[in-house]
Length: 287
Image 1 (cartoon, one colour):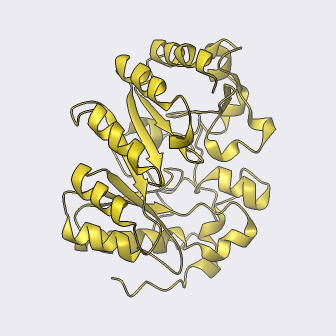
Image 2: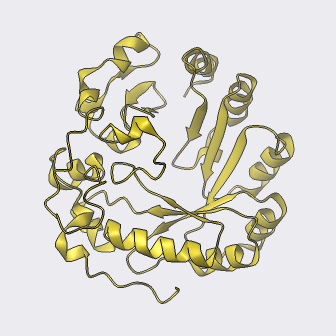
């Protein structure tokens, strides 16, 4: 996003009452104007969550010193490798960022992540359900029931572990009446914006131009928000998944429609991570 667009971007989302901005990549710390973006957001009482791979330690140190823990600014570092650099390890122990890792079929928790969360219960760790972007990726994914069971066991072992998955499956917060009555969060509790201002229901739709809702810098937001493209995501008429024996079926919304689109080219099909052949996935010995 160009520097001259930053103030306009923050002005727009601030006036809309947006309370949280997740900055994703690529690697956001490579972005030249990250400081003015974060400063402007914080000045407008917008909580920033910055997702990073932890490669730019010096920048992360400057962020941690610049923004105190009392400010609405959170660094989330992805820990998907078996070993961490000594600099990153020291940074984590000193500044206590949020940690996260993707759960794969053959690796539930990296050795580096397990070492940190077992020895430092004050550090939050998020177990992210893997999003396959192609049929080839499916072989690396657990089924949702397996993922949920494994992560629940991990949480019983380590209290600082939390699940992260699309509420297109189940809504973890039963008091969230909005997500209970919609197909998924896309276009209901979140929207995703590209650097040029293009708006999509969520980031998994970026590669599908037919799901572009408009442009934040060019279109009236009301037009974007009222796009008929969002009707599908805002209505839930019961789980269409055929796996009636699944223990989640009654409360499940059918999984992530974006993944169904990517794998099946069909937004309305049930999530491919809940097919029968996924249900025999083994539970890792780490538990």
